[in-house]
Image 1 (cartoon, rainbow, N blue to C red):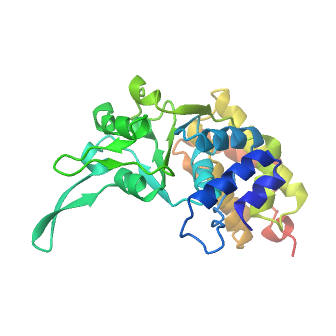
Image 2: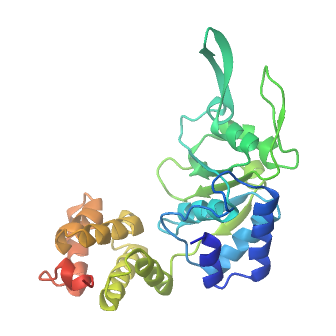
Image 3: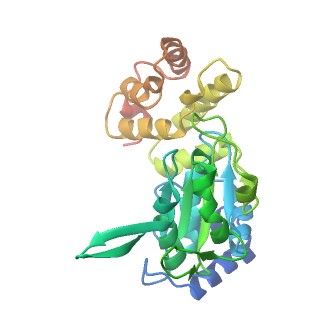
Length: 306
């Protein structure tokens, strides 16, 4: 199944789907012989966000996905690369990252000095989709090298080497959280080079779709209960009763996968959700919330159809 089939099922505008197919035709990828792309591990559900993101990328814009934890920023980024059939290069930002890491630097190989390209250079030269993950973790002086890549110039100046032009099929998708330790305000000059989508929290209906897609043998009763459990935890976090680290959609999906492989339900939920906090108060409160919805006698065979 191609991801465009999934987007058609989700009701994405036909004109946008035609635009993506035209992009693929104009910029063929070596990812597959028939022009389709590999399906990502997780799918992003949210028609309005999909249409906004596809429109921006078809217009040649770079995209900044901003939002809180568990809103699917990285999932959507990888889904977009798959939809356009482009190679995806993930660049995880941190405080010690410098410009040479992004663009490239000299190295010594085969008895001579050569240029070793960085991930931004590889995206620009190879027509890739670069995912700039947690872009507000890096220092602004390190990010300044991106200005000419992301604006109308679309070039990279490499000291000591020639200037290269960014390929027309290259796109950059940045993600950022507010409030994480080590984050900082994004420089205005850099922020102006993106169009921004504020990522909404996943809705009850879309979470149910996601769980059904990932675990097709799960009984509807338990799809609903695990969805409501996640919503309960998120509500407690929003009210300040729980640490935000307890809102972990990946953790919930990991726990369900462990159950599907036979691990006891309580143990799987402890590993995927409860133990994510090292505060006893948080663990006890989440334990109580789980007990209110999930019986301790429940077994994986009760959750999944044989």
